[in-house]
Structures are given as structure tokens and as C-alpha cells.
Image (cartoon, rainbow, N blue to C red; front, side, top):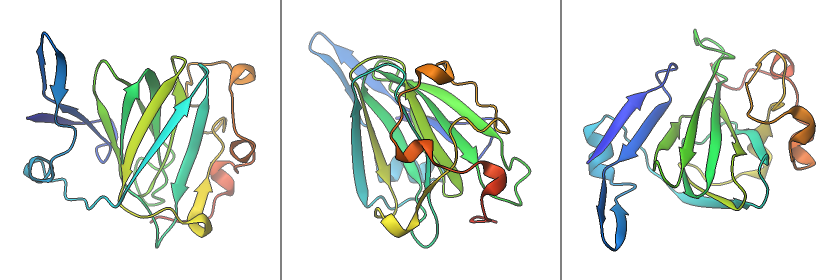
Length: 185
């Protein structure tokens, strides 16, 4: 009832639930533990988070939580669309410092599975965009960290010019990847 496709960084997956459409609209099962297990994904989600962004070009991220509160995330869009990014922070990984991105939208119903060891962020592509993500660890202010969304070493191809990005004050102060201590091996 769902498809799971690895991205160019195999640990990050695109999950698309099967949709059923009729004259009333569309139905899809966005999460089913048994179906995920059939695809080798064994996660215990403990918290759901939802954000809404009024403007196109709102960037949230790049965020992660360090151990012992590190989180896997399953991200989907309820309304609108986003350019969703995962950056590999696993220091010994052959893809360390590399990123993948996927367009997620309410229409395409794709979800991005971002595992522990990755920073996550997104840019809204439509106004009034609503994003929901499930996580495997509770929010921990002491472990809440990030890296600069515009780090030139990452060279993320954001769909918005830097001067047009809408950011929180917190997201303007994150360090570059090269300044980050080792949080994940």
C-alpha cells in the first residue's frame, strides 16, 4: 500500500502511500507500522509536529537534535508544497556533508524519511503551506541544534534567492558544517 524509494543518499527514503480517489476526494493511509516494517523501516514515533508558513520562501532549518535525543523524522505536507532537504552529518559516512532534496506537496503526497544523523530543513514553495512530521524522540531544548541553511560548503540549491529567504532569528545564527563538532559517527 506504499512505495519506498531510496534517494541518492540511501538512508534517506521517499515514501509514497497509495491513494484512493473517488467523487468525494482522496483517501490515503500515511503511516502504518506493519507496512513500514515490510519495507525494513522499524521506527517508534513519539511526537507529531506541525508548522504553517504564510509566505513563499520561508526556510525552516537546517535542524537536528543530538544524542541522546536524536530524531528520525517522517515529513509530509498537508497544504501547499516544500523543497525538503536532508544533510548527512554522519562523520564517517561516505556521503558526509552531502545533501538530498525532494519536492513534497499536498498533491503528490510524498513523504521524506530523514534518519538520525541528518540535519533537516525546508523552503516553502507556496503561501499558506502546512507541514506535519512525526519524530522518534521528544523535543529536547538542550539537544536542539542546527547548521547554516546557506553554508557555501553545502551549496544547497535552494529555490529562493538568499536575500528573499524568510528565516527565524535562531536560523540565522547556526554555524557552518566545518564548525560543527562531531555529533554522529
